[in-house]
Length: 474
Image (cartoon, rainbow, N blue to C red; front, side, top):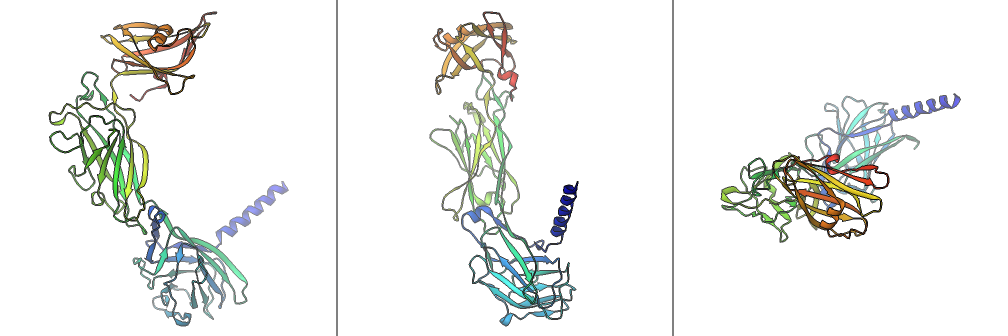
C-alpha cells in the first residue's frame, strides 16, 4: 500500500511538471510544411517566414535571458537583429522590432531587449534576448516571435532556410545565470507531396464462349485511381510528371489511338483521353504518362480513369486473362537524380475467365493404406471439360499438367487418385503431397467439389479442404 501511494505521488508530480512546462507552437496559418520527397531529394525551403507562440510557465524577472536554439535543419545566416540588439517598441500595436525579428506582446506589460542572432555554432544557431529592465515576464504569459521582419501571419516570406522537419528549444535563466525553465516545440514538419490509391478495381468476368466480352454483355472494364500533388508545400519537387504503370497480362491489347483504340485514359483536368499509353515488349506492363498540368497541383485529390474498350468500333480483340493487376506510380522531376517510385504493388483488381476453378492445397496420393479422391457435382445442363495442374512438395518449381474426362451434366462424378496421377503423368507407385487445381469449363458456381482421403485399413474418412470451402472472391 505504501508503494502504491508513492507511485501516486510520483505520477502527480510528473503530471504537474508536464502541465506547467514552457510550450512552443507554430502560429496557425503560418506553419512550415515541407515536402518529404523534396527534402529527400535535397531541396530546401529558402526565404521562409517563421512565426511561433511561446507560453512560459514560470516568472521571469527583469534582466532574465531567453535563448531559442534551432536544430541542424534551420539556417539563420541571413537573419539579423538591429544594431546593438535594440528593440523598437510600438505599445499601440503591442509589438517590438529588432531588425528581422518581431515580437508580439499584445497587452503584456513586458518588453524585450539586447537581441542577438548567433550562427557561429553549426547546426545549433540561436537567438537570445533579455526581459527588459523593470518589466517582469510573469508565469503563464505569452508572446509571439516572427523571424521574417513583420507581424503579418499571412505572409510566409522571410529569410530562414529550412532543410527538413525541425524543432526549436527554449532555455531561460535569471540575471545570475540560474536556470528558470526549458522546453521545445515543433518549428517545421514534413508530409508527403503525393498520394495514390486505387478507387475502383478491374472486376469483370470474361465469357468463356466469347472472350472479347464480359459476362455482363459489355466490352468495357474500368479502373480508377485517385492521386494528388501538393506543390504548395515548401521544398517541393517542382513540376513533377508521372508514369502510371499497370502490371498484368496485356497480350493483344492495342493502346494506340484510332479506330481500334482499346485503352482510354481520362486525367483530372480533361474530359478526353489526352494521355499516351504504351505496352512493353513482353506485353505485361501498360504505361500511362501524365503531364504536370493534367492533375491539380494544390493537393486536391482527383481521379485518373482508365477504360479498357475491348471490342470497341468492331475490334474483336481478345480480353487478356490474368491473375492480379497491380499498379505503381513513378514520379519524375528535374529535382530528382533518378525517378521516384512513389507507390508500388497497388492492388487494381483482376480479369478472370468465367470458369469454375477449384484448388485442393493438400492432396496426398500414392501412400500405402491411404486413398484420396474428389467428388464433383455438375449442376449445369452441359458436360464440363476439366484441365488440371499440380505442384508437389518434393520438386519445387515443377508444374504438372493434364486433362481429366468430362464431367457429366447434372451428375456426381468421382475422380480417383489414380485418374489424377495418370493425367498428370505421375508414377502411380510413388507417393506425392500435391496441391491440385481443377480448371472446369463451367460457369462459376455450377460445379462443386468434395475431396477426401480414405484409410484403407479401417475405412476412416478425412475431408480435405478446397478453395470453395475457404471462400472465393468470384
